[in-house]
Length: 577
Ligand code: ARG
Image (tube, rainbow, N blue to C red; front, top):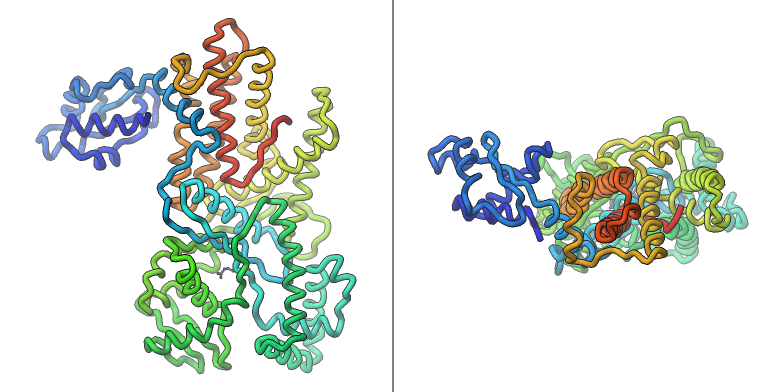
């Protein structure tokens, strides 16, 4: 049962205001003594020609607003405050979760609609660093969130697999490439020869010429060059896919820039036909003054296309193949202007799909007192970050297992450490608004009591262990709809139920704003509320069997809600810890 809906229906009946307006006005009071839902009466003052306080007071004794699901309805100043009947509330919320299990929070709002989520999109032959992890983790989470809401989701990886740098790589590889080094660690080897190319190029202009020629051959489809390029691409993908597999990340489509480069001509002729191309310093550009952004270059003065042209081609391709309702780009904030230009070109060219495209930006990644052994410069590889996190988690849970004299095998501990260690990294990326810079610090991210994945996973494992223990004692949760559930009226129980009830809404809001942190915050609230409940109420103690069963149901629902929520973030839970 949706209590908010009942509030809105009742108020709407009593005042004549339409349901939607009332529903929009309903607030969640900041303090418990102000009730669970509040309706502000200001809007009614005009039509009723009365002071809001007076209206609130009159409504509070109006029979039309009372309902068995409210324990009382009170006026406080201009507000009409609704206090839900806690027992009924717990019963309604928990029954809904029990019915859905880990499907809890699913909806059908997206049925029949297609969302393209483009994320990750690393550059071939370049290291996969912690910045790529930001888009990968955010995009993966957003894709799951949209799916949960019934959208049909297309996951796209717009690989950076095109450009003059491949001409350089081909030249460099022919001169200095080491086949066995390439096989052992492709990206390191490709990076090595790429860096060497730039060093040598300073003293040897013939390298520049050779690279340019090789790129041209590549573009023209010359067999040997294409083959080498393909080799670099495939080998890079092997490295990327290993990371994706580890994170559980998948894509439906790996069409990179090279794929769209072939369609650039069509973009150029389309823009020409519509008379949108103008010359500027030898280049062909689309003027975007009316959109308040600088012109978008389509063709450089040497007649070659650029990054933006390929993005325009990609949107037209996506529009044609997927008829998307939404096309989102999870790409760092520094590319905001680029996307604004690309979308504006299409808008100017009269494509409706331009309005369905959205850039979902994110901030920078920083580190606090963290050293990584293998890298020079500022770049930190995702793999290093994950490995360190898992290693540190392993030490922590191993020490803990020893103190508890647990009989978990080393293999089990390592399996748990892998999930929790990855979770700790993932959570750091999704725990705050995406536009904020994030700061990694081991102390924070591995704090089992903090706002962390280890805390969430630990809480989940705790609920599982309580349920297992209860089953051993022959005690089982009360069923969906059971009267027993209305025994859950304590403060901690009520607050748990409220936090659980908030998850579906948080998921919708996360999709609406492309902010997975709405989900992480909700799951974290559930875990906090549960631990307060756990610390204050004995679940399996006492001899009120009915209360025990009701509390086990609460436990079960917390467990399902955490599992559902962490899944949306890309974090895996464990049965014990
Ligand atoms: N490969 C680019 C980079 O690493 C990101 C691509 C973003 N996506 C796009 N459609 N332009 O910076």
